[in-house]
Image 1 (cartoon, one colour):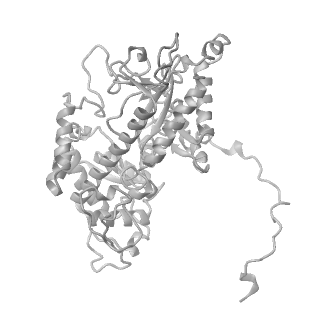
Image 2 (image 1 turned 30 degrees about the vertical axis):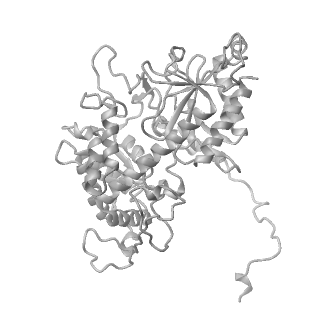
Length: 502
């Protein structure tokens, strides 16, 4: 073999060591580029590689054992609807598929072949994917006007950036919840668009405090203006989980809170969906549902930016969806929902086993919106230990609201109970910020990574949380059962040390 193609076995000198460094060209940057700041949540990624770190800071989808794609192996028949949820099960249901380079019917709109998928594509992606997405939107969201359409994108971060490019002008003020996903805000801040944080009640934003209002449908109230009976919904879900196939899927869809698309007769609503939270974040694949004028303009934006999602991602995802069909995909979503619920229970149980809990205490007013059902955690001390000032269980440590959906628990920390709080305040320091940052650092030093609550503060009255209150966001979507319990146990030990509880 020619020696030029062989790897050298001796250390080679760094050829760039004697080269000059690049000059500073900051003066060539436009103002939008100068205004861009680092994504706060992305800054946490550097901690995830620390050996032994239990990560509860991100919005990662379920652990890798729940991804819908696996290496090829011998197919095994599942014993039950949710047998795939349990990684140690000997009956994980699998089926294999192959994406051909050349398909037998290449002209069919549902055909997926590598010779097409790996070529340049239209901004709308392979025709088979929008076909499936339109079926999904029409059956699940049921839009209230006729000419809606969908457009694929490279995930919600990409989709949101394109929507800002579509609608926002420099200097436009944007209404946000007082607690808002920071990456969404980071997208429009370079355009010098200020945020106007809207105060929230226990359900969502308060539109008009003295008048009847509708809230976002994440809570008990739906856009229809009706309050859901949680016991009825729970019973419906329990009934649905007992049924296999189409009947169970239809029951599942019916118990979902309705989308705003279902009440929008004008085409005002722009909805973003993503496969990141239901399939694989690394696929970088999602879609927008909107009126035809917006879809046409978004298509023009896509053609000169991302152009189209990855051919590998669309080929794999579309083929998987075709193999499943609509009913199979809904069945998958039912399983994802059940898994999130199971992991939520793990975390709540870990708090129950680790702390002494008190429910709905008046002293938590101001920590969460009025009317919120809360649980306050105290150090679990020996039964015969009594503190004349603090009582049997010492000071309140953290308070949280048990989640009913999603993948997060928001914790409020009672930093006003810290022995140094009053001294720091008298010195003119922001005692809340100082102490919460110190607590976050001590947790990270003990290999537990939470998301700092101040990342999500949109500049409302809380500033960082509130007078005497700080916040953390915990994700229960990826940690194992053992990791969840270990993290909460470590959290309790760090809190005892932090608050100097003997």
